[in-house]
Each structure stands twice: as structure tokens, then as C-alpha cells.
Image (cartoon, rainbow, N blue to C red; front, side):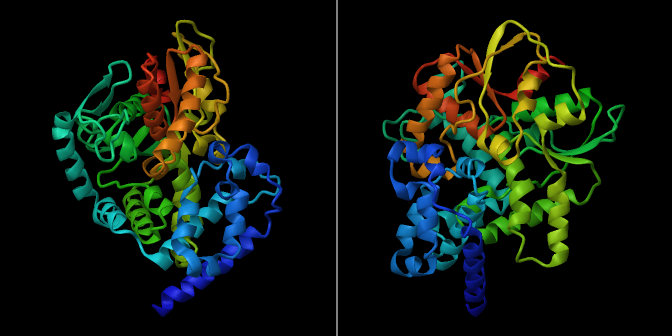
Length: 430
């Protein structure tokens, strides 16, 4: 207990040091998708930082209220990307969630999810494999074009009115159990981290990535036993589970040598590249060095194909109109936005069209969608409007979570717009 209190005090001090740069200028108001809907000062970065400046007192006075305010955030990074003072807002909010959770303790439901399932990938996979076999009893097809489902029961618990993507009949880990191949003419050897959503819901995205890597004769290391990148646990303030997931993945990938660790999920990329080292400050120097070395190898697959493999020069094709949505974590955190567009343009059967506000958040935000679905839907509906206004028949992106959110919005409006990953469209040319 004493050790926990010392750690809490240290984290509070570190948070104070990071917040002093905020000038309270209010620039974050102009770009925050949550504030645009609620118009509440407490929902914007400036308001949250003002709350956090007196965090130790506020936690004692109203810990639950502080937690609720911190959770009213998509963690999209729009505020940080547009802050004139360079305040690392996401770093501050994530650390603050850890502090509040350390003080309050994790809710029972999240304990079951994170400590009981997420940190035990074999059990987690077994539970979802079983769920995939019986999901048809409770759901029905909502859109053939999108492939979405909805509940057979009105006002079903959790599902509600959502149009969601069903669990795959066969996850990627069963379609491609493991890979360990040497490089050919491509010269490079990469590790591939599919992530939870691609493995369990969008295995075709993982297959498209593997098809592209094989086409370019890139050596592939895709080990068994991979688990979640850790962002769901960290976003909920459960650093203990986050650390376990980081360590497990680290030990698995350290078994082989490779040039890059690729992901096809913007959130996984940003988490592994940015947050793994950020949250390792309480580890030994040796462990920090190991995490930093692995994080340095992490790269988005779109960036790899364009910047490293140097795929064919973009051409302006004709045929299916495709637009592109910038995932927040890919553009705002990783600064990757030109490469996915270039990759789309290599398909001669695609006519690329830009949508308005392509980099505006889709409103998913992981657990934000579960806790604040009405608000998430309002933000997502605006994204849906921009997609439809572009005249595109397909909307592509580089994040499976964004794919799920846009599928929900388009399906509910009965729009005949397909949702695909950039790598799926690129793989069609190979």
C-alpha cells in the first residue's frame, strides 16, 4: 500500500510538470469533436487540464466525477496536434486516467474483461470463437453491401440500435496460424502484428497484408500467442494489465530478428510506437531499452509499402470511386496520411476522390463508443455525411476501429457505400 502511494505521488508530480505548458488559449476548442457537440468547457482539453491541475484534491472530493470527465474524451489527439504550445495532451490524459484508477480501483466489469480475458489470450480467443458460432441466433444481416449485422431483439443490452460487424467465421490466426519465412528479392524481413479486431472481425485485411508482403518477397514473422497491444486497458487506467500485455508481446517478438514490426491498425501502431515507451518510465533501464528498441521498429503497413518497398508510382485511375478517411492515430500521432492515398492510387480501377474534413474524427474512440454511444453516433453521422457527399462507392481507411464506426453509420442510413482497408484495395492489383 505504501509503495502504491509513493508511486501515485510520483505520477502526480510528473503530471504537474507536463501541464505547466498549457496557456489556456482555447485553440483546442476549435478542433475537439466532443466539444463541438456538447459545447461544455469541461469536455475540451483546456477544461480537463484545469481540473487536473488540482487533481489530488479533486480525487479526494469527487473521484468519480473526475473519472467521468476524463472519460469524456475520444483520445483522438486533435487537441495535441493543433496545440501552439506543444502540450502533450494525450500523454497527460492517459497518465491521469492511470492515477485516478490507481486511487479508485478498477470496476468489476473491467476487471473481468482486462484481467480475466485480455491478459489471457488463449481464453479470450476461445470465448470469442464460441461466440462466433452462436451470434446468428441473436443477430441478423443489416446491410449486404457493408456486411453489417444488427440485433434481432429491439433494445438489446449493449448492442442497442448499433449496426455492427459480426465476428468472422474463421479468425486470421486459424487461416494463417503462424509464419516464419526468409526474405526473397524484397530484401526485408518484417514481423506482422494483426491486432485483435483484424484477427477476429476483419481477417480479410490481414490476408491482404500477407498477400502484398508475399508478392514483394518480404520475409514474414507472424508468431502465435500474440495478444492485445494494450490500449483498451491503458485507456481505462489499468496500467497493470497494459504492462502484462506489453511484456507478453515483447517476449514473443524478441525471439526473432526483423527489420520492421508492421501493423494494419492505426491504433495499434500508435500504441506500440508511442505509448509503449511512454508508459515504461517505472521499469528498469534494461526493460525500458528493450521496449524502446521494439517500439522503434513499429511501422504502419501503408507507410512501409510506399516509403520502404516503394510500390509503383501513383496513377489516376478510373472506375470505382474511392474516398479516404484519416484515422486520428495514424495522421495526428504518426504523421502518416500521404502514403495511404498514394497506395490507393496504384489501383488503376480506382478513381480517388477526397471527402471534406477527411481527418476529422469518426467518433469511435474505442470504449468511448460503448460509454457514450449517442455522442459517438452524432460525431459519426457527420463523418457519414462527408463520405456520402463525396460520391464515393467505397470509403477506405487504415484503422479497423474506424471501419466499424463508419460501417455502423452508413448501414443505419442504408447507404450503399462499402467500407474497406487500404490494403484490401491495393491487394486487388496483385
